[in-house]
Image (cartoon, rainbow over all chains, first blue to last red; front, side, top):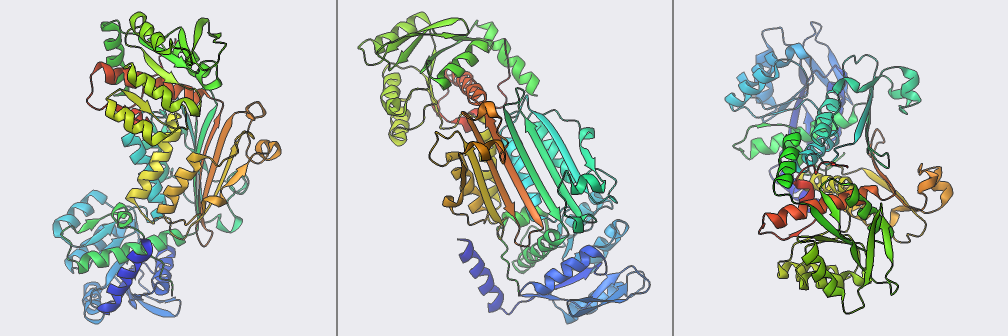
Amino acid sequence: MRARGRAIVATRASADGATTRVMVNGVSGKMGHATACGVVKRAGFELVPYALTKRATAATTDVLGTEVRGVDVGEEDAGETLERAKREYPGFIVVDYTQPDSVNSNAALYVKHGVPFVMGTTGGDRERMLREVKESGNYAVIAPQMGKQVVAFQAAMKLMAEQFPGAFEGYTLTVTESHQSSKKDTSGTAKAIVASFNDLGCGFDLNDIELVRDVESQTGKMGVPEEHLLGHAFHTYRLTSADGTVSFEFQHNVCGRSIYAEGTVDAVGFLKRKVDAKDPKTLYDMIDVLKEGAMGEWVK
Amino acid sequence: MRARGRAIVATRASADGATTRVMVNGVSGKMGHATACGVVKRAGFELVPYALTKRATAATTDVLGTEVRGVDVGEEDAGETLERAKREYPGFIVVDYTQPDSVNSNAALYVKHGVPFVMGTTGGDRERMLREVKESGNYAVIAPQMGKQVVAFQAAMKLMAEQFPGAFEGYTLTVTESHQSSKKDTSGTAKAIVASFNDLGCGFDLNDIELVRDVESQTGKMGVPEEHLLGHAFHTYRLTSADGTVSFEFQHNVCGRSIYAEGTVDAVGFLKRKVDAKDPKTLYDMIDVLKEGAMGEWVK
């Protein structure tokens, strides 16, 4: 079934000669660069050689051989750059991995110029963005977490809690998460998953999530590879029955950025198909992308 | 919400003075005995002092002070015993933890005498039993796995696979399960969960499930406590992304029988409420019990 689904998509793509063109704003940053590399590597995808950037020194970024020219969004020609890209790369889709303080203004810019976009940048006034984008009818995928498999696991725990409330009543929960030491706050993913465990009956206080930020515990206790100390997201949830005879443990351990970059490119492919199909629904999140099924690998 | 639900049930139970009476067939066996103890310990539950047994020497079993007299099902008075219990302990519910070769004949006996039952015994001709019980309109909970939380986890993985097919495409799965050395076949729960992971895109061969049955690996690698070597069910599933940067691990580790005994008593309480409410649906499984929400502890 999966193989068949993939063949259909591939045929459709080649039949109308459609290439999914992608502009990555924030390409000089780490997530933007990783996503741009994912675009270049994915068959049927093409990287647009312009990118809006906030840096006054709008430099050129090399993405696996594709030179992407940065255009300062502060300059008057930011909108003009989008219009020019629309002429030269019809049907292109934007990926935004910029900064929290640009989220709202960038989304407004994409809406103004009618450009479909995938917002991977977190922060900003989310409620306002979601409302404005929805009202505009502009196509967009907006999600705070682009790691498809992490989103799937988080949704599965939510489904379990909705279907079987109180199933883990009497169980004790412990939660440990490790991230690069530059991350000061508690993992949002951990908080969301704890909410589901509480619906399952655990009665856990969010303040009891153990934050691991020191190198020794990370490499020792958590098993984070040394080369990923500066970029990782490790989570462990442990449920133990009142009498101690039963335990459940769930771990999701992410090193580096490839899971997010892959998920973002999947979201772009998903959005392209929705735009092409003129789907009446225009605003999506990663659950929608996941429900569509496997995106295929298509690595060049 | 949970607290309120529990209060309502408790009030209802005391208002009409209803006690949930339970006959445990197979009470001299390990699961039967553990369940009978669970019945005695649970507030609002009463153990019927008769039990059908296959042993010619129908002995008496002590269950935390309650003497349960065994009555040979081979004798002509097996049905008479059920009728006598119906007179003396009106509305009682049977729990069956006997032997695979008694499953079908016992179910037929309960149906014949109109006794609601929870079938915890595995094996037998399941399809035939399910069909016959359903057609009879006799109330029953029939489930191969009574560990509520294990069933909930298994169902959550199934829900994830149904909602997000192919989400883990490209991931490699490894599965390890440890059980007491007397268990020769592969864990049925592991097989069911692997089916969901395959729908998620893992392409795992059931023959690759690693069976741990030797004491050294059990105490060392799997961490099974020595006192539970003769009765445990430990499962580990590990998913790793193609590039090795992402891993998910799921464990459910059960020692002894209390999780199954507790789940069985929960199923009895559930079935009692369905009988009392004259629910038009009469045949249930543990998913139905779980959907009803927390059963409460009510330990005396």
